[in-house]
Length: 486
Ligand SMILES: [Zn+2]
Image 1 (spheres, rainbow, N blue to C red):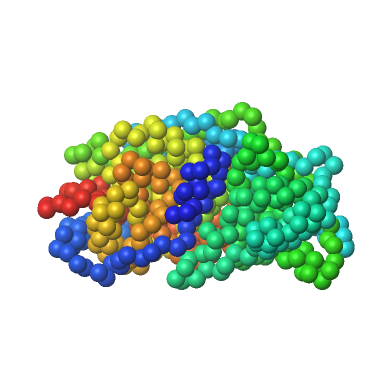
Image 2: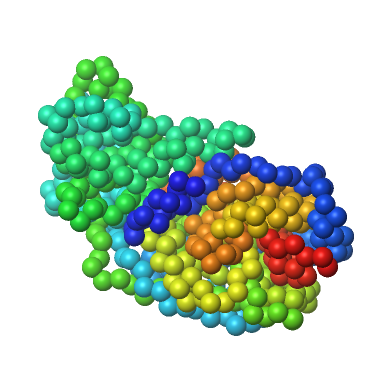
């Protein structure tokens, strides 16, 4: 996917946190080989047991409250993130998990400080905003300037320099609404958040404001990462403003008025990196403990809201999946390892460190949940080897039949997750836990990403999906993506 390429190109950072559109290759209704039906027959009984146990008692929602309500948001470099990392280890130990530990990772530290945005002409109005992760500060007196609103990069390119120089560029680019066939429009417009400051600075702008990357707004600004300023380019402050603010400025401009805005930001990228950690815990395999199936999410979040859907739910669903299996005393042939990656939002240092440290271990498969803790719908799969990917997709289509009672039935090929996707390079089958993503971007990276937006039963079903998929992938005789005659 284009987005994965973009991620690899930048040290800091275009973090996607979600994906959107995947070609569907098969559904659970397809049954086109004897091999596939074996997975179903072999694991039907145990899957039913896991589902029943996960429906009867499921602590994912309780764990989410401990993480999000008790600790709060968890930006890289913050004490709250390290508190969350401590909490996760304590919780996993209390559940009786094996090899609970933390791998040290150095992460970038960016802090927001105070910030505001105000329209000063043609009338005074506060515009709700959030600085973009990685942005520099404004001068201490702020920046007050006329705005120039554009609705695309092309429109910016077509403007003469004198229309841009000394102005605050506003990118008013609407994110297309969610559609059943195309998914969310996030991937189509997130580049304005990532690159807007660089594009505007090149043309002589003094600051950039980007319309929040969301298709729905109740005046909430959405933060997110921007790309590192290239070493040789001018740096200008960058912030996201509300859809309401961006569209107002645009309407005023279209009616021939010249709106002015004052922007104040204390944002700072600290020179020193900060210590953080990935959290690991296991059920060690009974026959092939050296072969690993990873399940997880990212434990860091933005510094607004409490990172409930992004990605507290991914973390607690993986933790609770291991708990459900542990309580059932299910020990598969291979090892199931929970990994809670740090620094997904603004650096991906956690996933890169995990790959570096563990690349010589045999990772059969990895499943990541980083699209919110909504009702699970299926799995996406990507592998370096396309032939293996095709086989794996067929095997997964059989596997999800085990989950049809909780409406998990879609298998797609394509993007898995930002963190787990790093393992693609070493041949791992990288899998994304897909959910009903209609509402994800309404609160993504906002103050409203809080526990009340998470449905207890839907989150519980994410944990069950993780548990069934991880157990089968860790226990099936042959490896995912490889033909086995057993
Ligand atoms: Zn995320």
